Image (cartoon, rainbow, N blue to C red; front, side, top):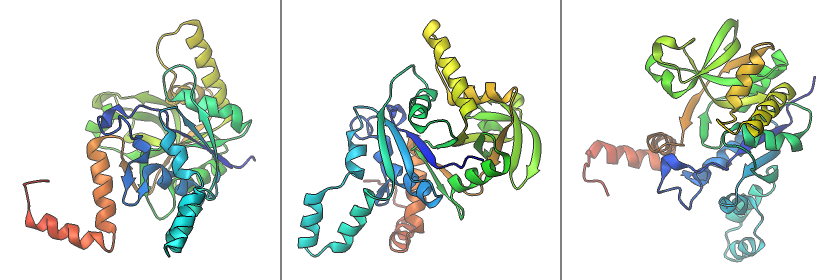
Length: 296
């Protein structure tokens, strides 16, 4: 069995849900405490044993590369100022993973960056994570997905339980069987169904183990788009088609999911991280207890 050794992180999106904040600042570089969201994602992968990472980006996202690049001038200045510990932390950014950058090209849809990167990854399974998702869990979300793949040897997508009224926000899997420990066999994904039409009580919330069969389906859909340039190429669509005739599984993630790609979700993630911080948490609780409604 081929192991999951590589990962793809698409970051070429425009971040329109967070405008005007993201007009110049990539949403993936928004901070959660002292780290950008993307760094949290990469640290999750490294903690799961995956350090060969392809970031699919655009010319608008130069800050992404700059953050993870070595900076000898800054390192020398920090050490000269007696801030060697800070220099060591920054130095780890450029050595924590082997990162390859690739510019996105092709039709609209989140399947395009996955297909772009697949040509570099090669004929093996790989992880796909969106860079605006943050998970807090005892076992990293990526490791939970890898474990599910090792159990099934088939594509796996991350799932979370949802309330019925939330179905119109997510792709909802068609569940055929529950196999224990949160592992589900699925036969498709219905995008944003009405609550009465939702085929299950789970939402697909980002995080995938993609296999060559899924890549082949993305290739087919992209060719269809070339022949008839309408619609979009989505990873969930490729998984849905592949699941019609092939085994596909979902893993219910044990942890808390923070969607930082929208204003309220980002504030919740930032607030939760600050409350959990040993220094900032007590001060924020004092502020909340005062009930100050005046804002900034």
